[in-house]
Length: 117
Image 1 (spheres, rainbow, N blue to C red):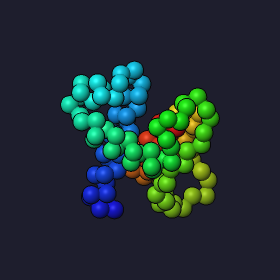
Image 2: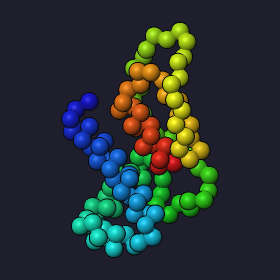
Image 3: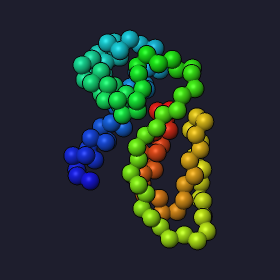
Image 4: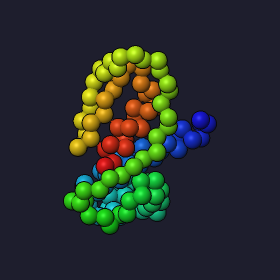
């Protein structure tokens, strides 16, 4: 993976958090952006990109139960005869089992995807 791809993924993660903060702030997007020195064009560009990746729409009701799929990199194959689960993380209605040796980037991607659901 190139450094540009990694930088873009990091920006996507930052904007996913920022957009969630904006939506939960109760402020209009224009005011939220003004408070942070961000142009609304930048906000909506990142929102469109994130929605395109998740297949969502901005006007989709938040109360309906939906399934969102995210493409994740294939995990590195480890030779294991007995699974040794070390932790389970619960975010909303999602449980993620964590095993020794998990790739840190994969774990970050999983946690970010779970937060978006």
